[in-house]
Length: 381
Image (tube, rainbow, N blue to C red; front, side):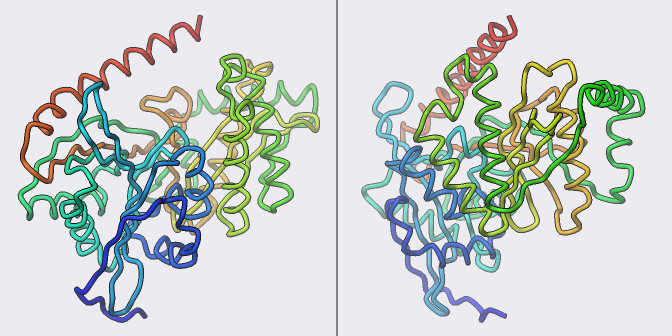
């Protein structure tokens, strides 16, 4: 049992890539965090930082009695936004980290968040305009952030709110898949699996040992590169630094029992692979790839179905985040729950910067969304 926290605290801003020396303390905070975030745990974040956050830093919050880390807030300073000089402190997220909830000690959540805001307000090197990205809307951290902001008279608007598929059964797990999918959809998947099995044995495999996970990762990279991402030049294996980061992060996490690779194997060959990450009572389906030559058999859906049953069978797992975009046509049909994600644009001080940002940020996002829809239409051909 940890001793009660005192109000005496220290805060500091440090480069994220230089935090390897506090990894043990950092992992301890992750275990006590009010909301788990695998993407901010040291095994993942330290692997990602050199490639995806060379300019990222973190505000560290420590209590003095007892002395321990109670908050870690990864951020980066943007000197320009919207094509104009508008300094912004943004929560560190990237295409490989779809969650920006900071790690905050559950026993000191309000204290840590207030100390973070105080540090930003007092540090002349940090902007007073913040964008806290990819928070769990209605989660403990977002709620405490709102309370702390209200107490200091700050202002905020929410942008980019969306929902993504979540596996979080509230009651009896037996029959969950049948209830969500329905008999017609489930029978169709069973027929697809039987047709696939006519040409070779179909098996579900879950790699959890370091050696098996490495092999599963190799299969994932090959599958991704063979599909549309490979054709577009965006597959992870096509960028050596990205591949190395992913391998380092996953191998580091599997050593801590926090990563696995789920595979659908046909005739001895992997035709679909999911990388699954785990922290506390939660999990994330981080990355998915499948062999597009088998598209008519829906190998990605068949794998997701088997992975879902495996996740449901784990009594220590409360939820699994799909990491998918809103209204995803596959996982959205298989998982019945939703997680609401939101970005918070925050002004610690009054000024023209917030007035400009609150008008321009929503427009910027609409333009990005329109471009993505156009890209998807072209891809579907």
